[in-house]
Image (cartoon, rainbow, N blue to C red; front, side, top):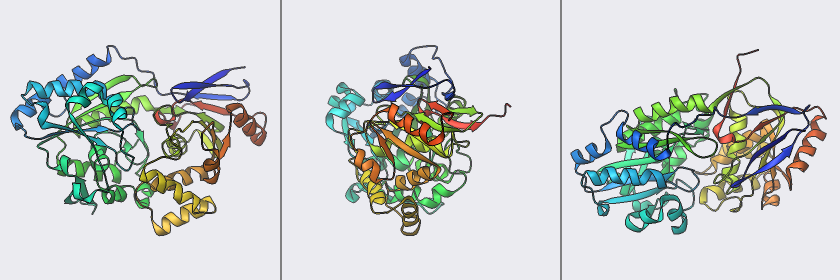
Length: 434
């Protein structure tokens, strides 16, 4: 009897499957880094794409204020590795720490605690560089920077807007709206105001056929976010591509457009996986830190359902283990997401309400999850909030064995079960091989 395992928190959970049920094991392409993460980062900074070296840019601009925009704890970006190299480049250009502020791109998520920042950025950096959590609803610390050509209002963090040199870190991974995360999203979402975030997560933006996971061509979200980053002036990015163990396999640095596109070209080859069949049941995982709450963890199921060729068939079942120590989620966006579900009596009503009344930033995730659940049921396994899960029209089981037994009883003893260990790093496409 084959045994498969999927991430659960910082560890794994194992599942026993009968050979007759086991379908495809779907994984991103294995890319072996030929050197250490430190060497990968340093090489990227020494050979930027589309710009001079950061030290050269800093020496030419002689900035009084430098801002480095970093990801929050919901993103597995290795900022503790990126920042020392970035700071070394700035120091080489004569930029002392007093001129540098690190702004955490929280978007609509909760602010990071001091301990979380020390763990993510490095305690030494937090002790010597000012670190500020962005607040998208604090209007006194937002600046209006006009509108994009698509009529999106641009409200931006004042510290970021007033900086003379803007740098951002990030990871390039599949994203349901943006195609891929990273680069422009750090500015256009991470340190933007609520109104700007809301425009880009509007339902008509997502319903556009080009606003799709793994696609940036003609993608309204991508084009609008890129325009915001260009208008504001994102001078330099450092973005990484991770393998399934969270290790860096590629880093791109340089221009917000050129370096990002180089990173996407690489990510396409890693994350887009051809498959030959759609299974009755897909077992998948998201791992730490995405399993922290329901809002983040359910992204894994949406990645499955919204891939160009979903690995689970219409009416099938997605099984996702996640403990969710923060429950539904503690941020304003997470609470809006929850309220959009519990204020409705069924999935169709969730979708109808959002389409007719709209939804504030963060609540957009409710629309995506409801659409996901219209494609396939979602069984959450082992969470701390089973009742909340059920209130949101999902299934809940205490163990993977129970969830699998339910699926096999529902679809039959010969049901096909595929496994995607890391759903946030996989975009399934239909195989051309017969």
